Length: 357
Ligand code: IPM
Ligand code: MG
Image (tube, rainbow, N blue to C red; front, side):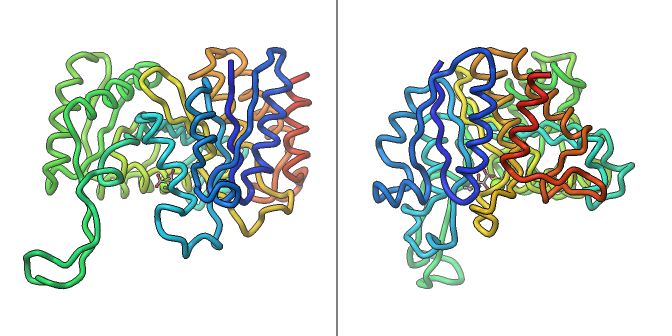
């Protein structure tokens, strides 16, 4: 099994180093190859997604991705900005299913900005469609407005669009995920306003017939945003489009109080996947050795489960993380009074020690 490792920018290299340590600590050997991406790709190859990096990612069985982005690239034209690397990988590798688990670990309920009874035991899975919608829809661009009340003024435009098969395939991923959990699925759209959402709702509803054991409900995105902070535990699995999923997954992440804990998987039709922490590159703390590596380590667990077919190893890694939390190990972002405060590397070492015990 070949794993492409793309550390990226900011804290990316530090957290990925710890995650690779975990992978290497398992009995089984995986072939690991590393390549630059994001700002780091731009520095060596003049592009955030160098050809060699894309080739490596295309041939690997799974990809471990750190994070990309740094303020110093903000003034580059859009095509050259670090974010294009992750969008390019999603597009080229047809990674259409983004799984974002939102789990509030019992040891960390105090870190949430919500009352602990609202979030304790929280366990949601967000299934975000990742390769369509307004992110990739054509046409898009900048032009002089060809019509309307602002005729002739400079305008920007994007296109929100979804095709039936595109919605159907993500629906199957979501229903099947729900079958493995509490069997409740909430589809989130804006069908009261958008044609794209009406089609989305129709397709999700028709696919539901194939999963009679899953209870399906629909919510408008504005209401869903409200319900997520009002009563987050009413959700089991959420399925939504690319744009709404981007926004709601950040909102949901904050319910747990610790975005440094949340992994994610982006899968293609054959379960080849890209695994990355849900957080960004945090350039403000890069190089200080204080970043939380647990989201990346938990992403390795998802990789073992979904792409490498090693569910047992995945459970071992997740159990090791729970065990070090119970032992009181905390990086700065999740620190509590009387905890064992550690840096990035010590946290990685603690997980390895827990794996061995
Ligand atoms: C995410 C990020 C990306 C997105 C950015 C970096 C392009 O916010 O993975 O949620 O918008 O999808
Ligand atoms: Mg986002």
